[in-house]
Image (tube, rainbow, N blue to C red; front, side):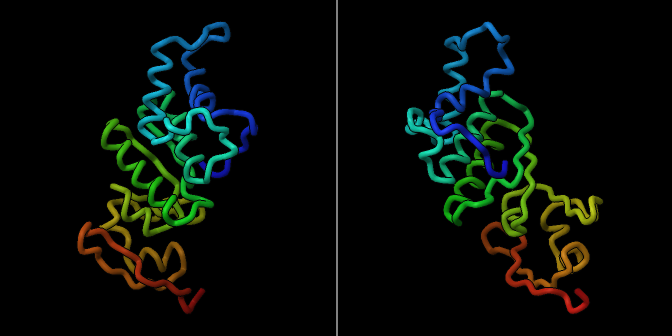
Length: 181
């Protein structure tokens, strides 16, 4: 989920309703069950109070949650998110990441995300894959693969890594380009 183009006149409710289209043929209307799924998707993502607002009028974080609600309305077992925090300020980034964790746990859903913020990836993911040149270089838990060696090899950076006291997850404290880069 990077940046989405949307018509300025689409309400949040209508956007989320688009998620039901794969379950209908061209002539079928949304029924009560669909409306319940749409409302539940908006409730889970916190956009139900925004249902009648135009998507274009939303903040970046609200807009991302509306798009996630649309995806949830499809009732997937697997959800792919492409950089869901791009263009968001830090509070909205954390809001989206916390939402993703909540959805994973409450819906027993597998979520695959592309993230370029290494600390977000380490903090919010159960498993990571680090790629370079289109090839997988490392895969495993954040605790297994977020280390000085992997960051130097994959990203060409020298990093100081600490362990977060609360979560026991690795946290990249500082980075600079490796001398050979």
